Amino acid sequence: MSGESGAQHQNIARAALILEALAGCARQGLRLTDVSRITGLNKTVAHRGLAGLVAHGMATYENESARFFLGDRLFAWVGRAGERFELAERAKPYLLKLAEELEDTIYFAIRRGDESVCYGRAEGSFPIKTLTLNVGDRRPLGIGSGSLAIAAYQDDAEVERLIREYSAARARFKRADALIRDDVRRAREEGFSLTEGYFIEGMTGVGVPIRNSHGIAVASLSVAAISKRLELPRRQQVAARLKVEAALMERELSLLFAQL
Image (cartoon, rainbow, N blue to C red; front, side):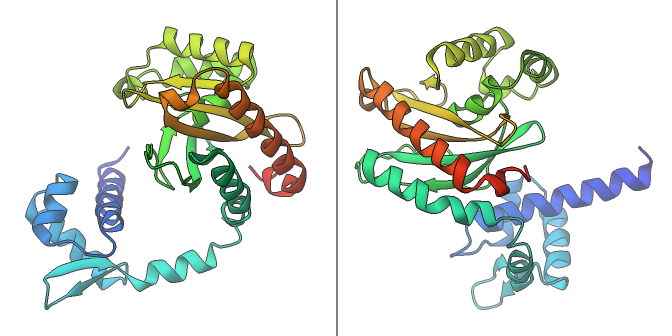
């Protein structure tokens, strides 16, 4: 990679870091010191990045509070990209129905390359929430119940490739190759993915794949709850309910899944 190309990538990466920070505090905005702290960029670099984003309409600055906010230009882009993200909107009724019935948090994820992306979340009425993912969060395939549900139902060669090539990317999640292989084997045997205490002690996740018309797992539905709510036999009942809704989505949204 040339020096010029590397610098361009670095600038884009910094801009993405800053935008992500602003998105995380969209209502209250952030001061320069906040952006520097959250992103790990020094104040000079953070200020330069913020100034560039403001100049191009991707961020705004409020003099009275000395805070930065996401810019209106991003809103315009979201509108233009609506067709591409139609699947996220169309999936909402299914998630809300499941959340109402099961009373726990429901997640919808899709495959993008070798990662899973959270495309939807619906919170149930149970008072103890397990909010491990935000919409837009990405994870290496195999990490988390929804992501694992996508990975486990690929063919054997693809599973091995994902395990081999993304071992380093999974390191921060403390899921070694052997553990992922066990997760995949168990998911295939039981018909649903299961994660118990992987990210938060006392939290369990259950996931099922959503397949396109060729039978390839391209998305998933999953539920996350405190472990006591996903003990047997309820765990199997929840998985069965997820499978019913996944099959319904496969039929009714088949054209959208064909685009993944």
